[in-house]
Image 1 (spheres, one colour):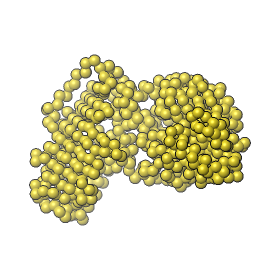
Image 2: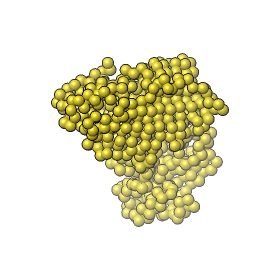
Image 3: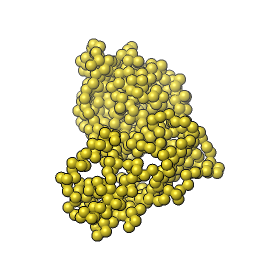
Image 4: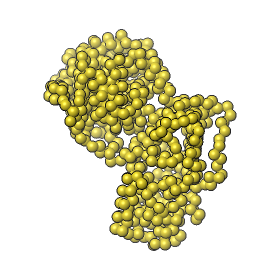
Length: 617
């Protein structure tokens, strides 16, 4: 027995005598509930070698109507089928000993993997639920508890610990007093279970496996795309497993352990709940230290952007998402410095993540496309430059689990601070020791990949540029990708510039300058945003003009300038080499979280890593 399963079972054994048999249920009703639960639990704990379950869902999630059906059939120890229908998509996923096939009717496409499989992350029915549920998700705890129980144990647990109450004499309907309008209702034969909850309902039906054919012919007129079968099954295993962490995180993700760590050429610190990662050395040494310090976080990042997004994008587009990323990387690779590739591959080696996964994850922003401003001179108190950067980007896939501030001193380069993510070597928000700060905002142009990746260009500016003119020249002289907008600032002058960039065009927008997209100029101000966020940001800056300090600059980035997907916010004060950073949590966007002050100058002067080599502890 799995050791965690054993612990859960022992916990229930000890709790039940204390809790009793349920204040409102008789022993007879407990037995009746147990009889109804047993067949359902057998589908979870592996006692049922074949089963078929159909689920009809009608609910609201965050105010959005969600309706659809799911049918899961296990034929034997080698074969199963999943069919999902939803107003916006439908799919069928078949798995036998010889093949794995994803059918997407809306695209008239079937994606097929055949032949032998590498061991490990497979869709083999035996033990599949264990592989699909992360141990860092509460879903695994619930599953292991259910898998540890027979019907009698589960019935006692539900009536005592969850306080289920029978609503009729035959114990077919049970209510959950702690949750308004929540109930369970079994059909007399036990083959149908209706679950009512505040936001909707789910109806589960057990159907005879004999009514479902294990063979499915290829639909006529469908395009068939062959892919590597091991990769195909890995996509679903790691994507689903990561989704359980995102949708139902456990304590280890909500409240991660905040232990400092030291490795050769690297150090992990925590400051007020935020990761601070210090790295120094050659690209090889920096990459090895990065991977060793943040192994779990790097894997989570890759699982989110490659596999969780990969499932969604494959179903949405009908194309194999990982091949789309490979195509992007193939065109972008020429423009990525060799030092950055060495760093990525070293990070992959020390973290235990495949090198291709790290490389593909690092060009992910090129496939998916925020607000920024800089105020100084007459706009602020004492004329100090404040550069605000709002990143609104995909909190829904859990990128905040890998968030960190990196301070990197690569041999022969300018030291810099990078507000980023474990496993990501590029930059979208950063400031260097020469008082240069940069923030990026995504636009359109997906597919324009014959140039330097945006995040690579940002990092090169941090590593190589000492002045605002040098940053502008880097953009002028480099082939660019897609459509992006930027705010660049130089605390030494002080000065700032807005940038609109595509592969064909480059426009610099100076402080105080009027612009067709941005409106009338505001003195000593650069701002880049759009829609209602732009209107609010303009109004706030205008009303606060001449009075802006740290607190007001942070307020400028609050909702609704920041959106519901606000991943991180940064206020750079490059003249002082300081930055204030807020990261999203599982429950709050970055703008609603505390800002933590980091002093790049002090870190570079006082950290023992940057002063003398530190031995491995």
